Image (cartoon, rainbow, N blue to C red):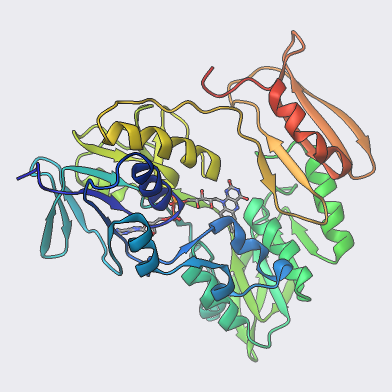
Length: 384
Ligand code: FAD
């Protein structure tokens, strides 16, 4: 039975479609079935936080409809089909009452947004954006609105703050951290990005949280823990993502922060693999595009019979705050060393150096951002 069964890929995000593309580069015929809970439209998720800057709405950001993708990749795609379980012993995927046999199963089902349980009756004005359908709903709800409050000052919160200002909206950012992008940027670089966003007109309310959101007129009033109140038409919640692990754990697969896989993207169950935002690859949870592309290339070979381990190179992250171009390559969490900072106004070059003087990570903003390529060559890859 399992010999005729297709490779099933769950998810049509960048991970699912990149993997299908890598498979088809090497093999035109092996049956592949893609199953997705959404509409299957192909898009580049990082572009969602550039819509206003690039003058594109949700339709403008879509890259390929489902039928076109199925034709192009010679795969079958089932849309609005939510997986509810995995029977790894029987090699079957479970969708409610239905069971689908697989020869090999790839979990590329992404991460969930973290939702805060806040008090107040204004919750229907709170949006999260983690896919194109969310983005479409947000843009529709924005309508004639003019004021957006963003909860969270991480990469996604800051990118949307810049983009919404470029779209002419009034933007307030509220976050518990004292700096923007904590854990990603060193202090000097974080201050530079915040300064340039403030110069653009973004209001920051850091070191505090939103306590409650109440309806007021057509919009909402946010009450912050520091006693401030803010009015907004909409609230964008960008407080973080959590790899989707529940179904995998229920199926007996090993999970930790993500679905645990080794460098060959193998889970603890035979013939079940994971990549992208849902996966913890050799101890790393990296919710970025470059890692999932590297994983797609390796996994396609493995699925076609040549077991291949992923090799991560150095993978800088570009932060899409055009008011302050920024690139960062965080040092490994266990790395020992210090940040050395060179600064000219909001142009910052911060190098994380070991005691021996080796560069283990960097963050560059403003005019120094142009040095990202050269610096990437100095930083050792994640897998040496
Ligand atoms: P997803 O795109 O989330 O896809 C998951 C798929 O699984 C979807 O098709 C979903 O419908 C499906 N699915 C989920 N559950 C089920 C189920 N039970 N049954 C069936 N199907 C299911 N990264 C960068 O490197 N650079 C950037 O500049 C950058 N900018 C970003 C900006 C924004 C606004 C956001 C939100 C992210 C950004 N990222 C960036 C992160 C990057 O976009 C993600 O790491 C990447 O897109 C994740 O792709 P994925 O395919 O793993 O997951």
